[in-house]
Structure formats: C-alpha cells, structure tokens
Image 1 (spheres, rainbow, N blue to C red):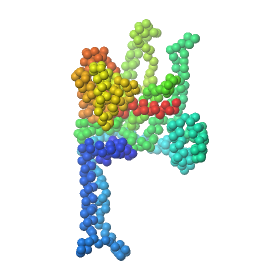
Image 2 (cartoon, rainbow, N blue to C red; image 1 turned 45 degrees about the horizontal axis):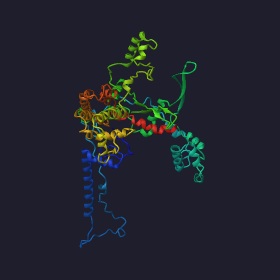
Image 3 (tube, rainbow, N blue to C red; image 1 turned 180 degrees about the vertical axis):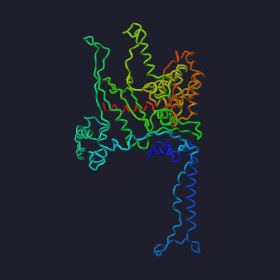
Image 4 (cartoon, rainbow, N blue to C red; image 1 turned 120 degrees about the vertical axis):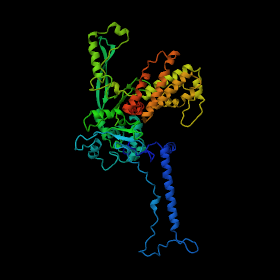
Length: 556
C-alpha cells in the first residue's frame, strides 16, 4: 500500500511503515528485518554524529581566561545593539529525515516505501460520476443536526455520555431502572431518570442506515388436522445493502484507506515476482476493470452469514445474521464453464423426465432442489463468489477433524495427550495441561496453537508416511495464513500441496479413512488460484463474522 493509506493510530516502523499493536512489536520487527535494521542503525549513527558535532562546536566557542577558566556571558552588561553568538547550529540536534527512495527504474513502476515496485493501472478508474459534489451521510448530519454547541449531543457532558454508554452495553431495562433510582445517581441529576427516558434519548440520536422488518411465512413438513402443511411466521430484520455501501464509502474514518483502482506490486523492478496481499493488488480487480467503461468504480462486497444461538439454556432460539462489508474482489476472466448457460442446458434436458416424487427419487436419497437465493441475480457465478475459509476448511476441517483424528488413530493410546501435557512452557505457546482429547469447545485459537508444535510433537509416534502428510498439510495451512504472498510463496504453497497429494492414498490403504473424496480436501486445489484472483485469504476469514455474533446477540 502507499503511504496515504497508512493507519496513524498504531506504532509503526518509520522505514517501511509497517504497523504493529505495540512498540515492542516495532522493536522485534527492527531486529528481524535486515533492511529496516540497517536504516535504523544509519539513523542512530547520524543522530550520534549530530550530537557530537553540536557538542564540539559548543566547546570550540567557549570563552576562557588566560588562566583557563571559562568566562560566562554577562548578558546584563552587554549593550542592547550587541550581536548574540548565534553560530551554534541547534538544528543539528534534530532527527534526520528518512532518505527518499531511489528514482523508479522503469517508467511504469514506482518503488514505494515498502520496498516493492508498484505498477499503476494503465486506464482510467475510480472517477466521480459528475462534477457536483454530493455530501455524504456524515457530512449531511454534521450540517443539519443541531448539537447545542456540545460534542455529546443530547447528553449534558462527557460523564453523562459515558454513563449512558455503559448502561446500554452492560445493563437491561430492569437493572437500569434500579440503578437510576439510587441516591448516588439522583444526586448527580442525569437528564434521564429511568430506562424508558434513556432509550428515547438514544433513539433520537442520528442513526445510520434504517432497519426494516418483514415477516416471512415458512411452510413446514408437518401436517395439521386439515391435512395441509403447518406454517410459521418469522421476522426478517434487514437494511438496504446499497445504503450500507454508501455509508461505508462515505465514512471519513476510511478516507485514506479506500482504494478506487487496481494496481500490481512486485518485489523486483523487472516484474518477475508479483505480490498478492490486498484485493486491489490481485488479478480479479484488474481484469474486471478492463471490461468496464473508462472511469468506472468497482466496489467489491463481502457477505458472510453464520448461525448463532440466541438462547443459552432453553428456548431454542437461533438467528442467521448476515454481515456485509466492502473490500476496496471471482475467478478467471474466461471460466471453463458459464453457469447461466450450463444451468439452462441441464434444465432443458431434464424437463421431459420431471415427474412427481418417483420411488427411485426417494430411495436414492435425493431431495427437491428449490430455487436458491442467487437465482435471479444477474451475471451471478455463485461458484466464483465462494471464497476459501481458513476457520472451517483448514483449522477445523482439514486439521482438527481429519489430520488430528488420523494421528490419534495411529498413535498408541494416550500418547498424543501425554506429549501435549509434558510440553515445556514457552512464551507465546499455549499449554494443554489436560491434553487435547478432553477439549469440548474448539476455536480457531486452539487450532493455531496446536499447529505451532504439532509436527515436532507427533514425530516418532506416527508412521513416517503420515508424518510427511502432517508436515505438508501444516505447511500448507501456514502458507494459507500469510497476509502477503508473492509468486514464489505461491509456488512453495503449491509444492507442499503436491507432497500431500503424492501420499494421501496411503491414508485409505492403511484403513484410516474409507476414501479421500472429502469436500474440504478438494477445496485446497483452489487456494492458490483464489489468492491470485482475490488477494490473501485473511480478508475472507469467517473468524471476523463470528466475532460479530457477540455484540449482535445483545440486541435479542
């Protein structure tokens, strides 16, 4: 990324502008990256030299008596028109600027501060639709919502705003009323005296995209007394997707972080090794941009949905929240098949054979295929829109459900648990003091901690062929987790996948698994292609959508 997109709120390396969570992360980065470490050493050497030069100059300009004693300046005795000794270059004490990068070696590629060569899109993209500047939702609210000269809206001050925020995040209606009735709160006289008044104030605040509610009638498979299927009404709360996208693009917080045109990045000036990280550096955006009229703006949208439980102990209440964000992307420019035409051919050929519920239809375990949600979406290739999933495909599927299970099957009883229990403590590594077979609730955190030590830990207690498979799959998972890929790293990623494919038949030959026709393993062959098309997989990881469940459930 270019410097204009850097986040200024996190500690960062002043040489490559990489951001870290803590200052200690910057120190570790400088210790590991050779180029930044050399630049930091040069900077410190320059600072030391400047300090030495300034000190030397001060020593040389001291006034001394014939006896060698320093004569102090007597400013009170100096005439008003006397010139001060201003030869000392105090600016020498200033920190030197980072030297500018060398000029680009090719006209089409510019070397940025991250030591990579950027090739800009050769067409026109991301142009405004008109010369008339339309205010964003945030600008409209800032101009039209009166705040009574207060930064805290209808609340008296920051303290009252903090109290209201804590109540909304932590308490329910009943406990809020109890809190507001206490003498301590009454003495401070907040502008709300009960939960109802507080909710009214909250509802009066400027809102984002409005919520709408529709009720959907769902027909079940249980018959009522009349012999007709029973139905149930479900509420569907939704917001307009277009309005959400407009809100995200117009949010001033993201002003310097949004990309409106594609680019390609390389590790060398010759362009032999491409970098894939952000979505706008991948192939999909570049290819799609060339198909559109000049100046068109692409806004890639990521949609994620996952079931979440609303009730804890009883009630059996579940919801399927749908999350939407923009990725300011699905496959190649010319897919092997065009889904629209393929579906039409299949439908045309199957029409003469359509009958109602034949016996063979039921005995073979077939089910009716209802029109999917994307059936009416124009130009929709749903197969290209489904992206790799680190959490469910790799961490939970390939690693935990299959690889760990294979190793537990081949290792002697309790051996893996014993090895995890006696693993020595080390900074950054999780201790599994009770082993792994007793864990009932798995998250991506446990999977990633196990993967750090798994290859070394199973060595010697599983067959050599399974150890090769284990190493290949764990290496593949670590490659898939990269936040930035290059052509070389993708070749290495494909190489370890080839090692797994060379030995995977031995899993069946040794009776560990009936067959290897497993969807999660079949998906691995598409990972490198997906990264080249859409950027690194961390942008599409379902971990972030599942984390949203925590706050989403509070509303219910």
